[in-house]
Amino acid sequence: MSQAAASGLTFDARPLVEPIDRRAARDYAKRLRQSGAVSSFYGTGTGIAALVFGVVIVVVFGSVFLTFISSIINLAGSSTGGGVGIVTLVPFLVIAAVLVFLITLAVRGSLGSQERWYRLNRFAEANGMQYVPNLAGPRLPGMIFGVGSARAASDLLRGEEPRFVEFGNYRYTTGSGKNRTTHTWGYVAIKLDVPLPNIVLDAVGNNGLFGASNLTAAFDRDQRLSLEGDFDTYFSLYCPEGYERDALYLFTPDIMARFVDSAAALDVEIVDDWLFLYAERDLSTLDPAMWAWLFSCVQALLAKFDQWARWRDERLEPTAQAFAPGSGPLSVATDAAASTPPMMLRPPPGVAEPGRRLKRTVPWWSYVIAGIFVAFWLLMQVLPDLLP
Image 1 (cartoon, rainbow, N blue to C red):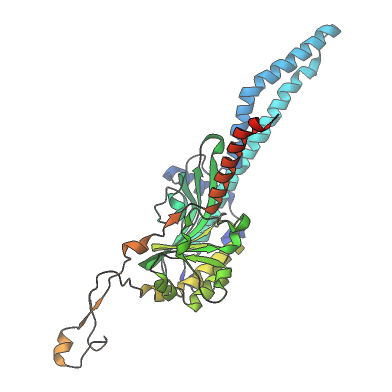
Image 2 (cartoon, rainbow, N blue to C red):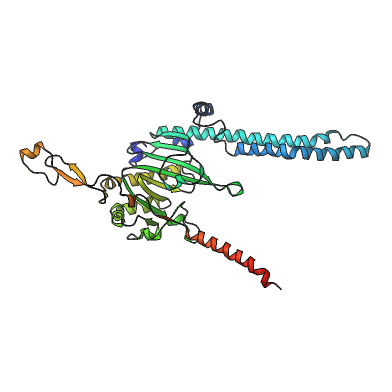
């Protein structure tokens, strides 16, 4: 991310909306494919899906359809004692028209992907970032990255200054066969200075029916920590047991206000030396308003991370820390002290084992669903005996 964007001054959204050179977009897509950054068909979306579906329809049902129609036409011709002329071509014209329509969709889908890649790459360059169109199995410690199969991130934009920030979309699948489901997430990953306790802020505003969390994991209610003010109306905060005081140190009133004002629509996770913002939709898009909001969220949080860098876990074994003469709390104004910097004991950066991961549990609604199935099964067992 550029220094200007990170400091909240401005960012350049023109590449997202201004007219583009389509030949340059095609050349850029060609370079991506030649480099292996994307496959030949990656990202063509609805067009390729529609084309494949159309081919299957033609192969499976086309021969049956044509045989049936041809039989009817032949019967009509023999009963009238003559041919039916151009009518015999109608079924073939219909099939041809369907194929042309599906191929047109595929071409338009391919052109749309080329334009998206090209625009996002130019947007990244204009704002001091790097664009990565596709990344299989991103190795990030966030909760959404360890679920399901076929894990892949797309449309990643990465910045290095003033700290590493990555924006991206993410897909994974769960289940199999008819129960196979593809899950869509958008995320922002921000690299922190030191590892911190595993803390989750479950946004209240994006929860489901009866307040069911949309997160991929459920956490033990004993780890829920209530904070002052109206913070609890926006977020449910979970921290490891025994780390309540540490959470209060990290989430001071001014930092809580930043999260409420800027990120109340996003779920938040702190794990190891990363902070993640999650949304159950794509975040890396061609929408300038979306990027303006994301940049403002990140800018608001970056300003407070210096305070988090000073946190230390008192449960770790202290190590000696050196101070320059005259600057530390144990410094003395002697010539001998000037030649040997004084030392003090302080825990090293890191998190003790109990604070590294929250304890997970089974969501309450899964018990409700299981209870319904058990009640239905019992009813089916006794119902025959109750009927006359």
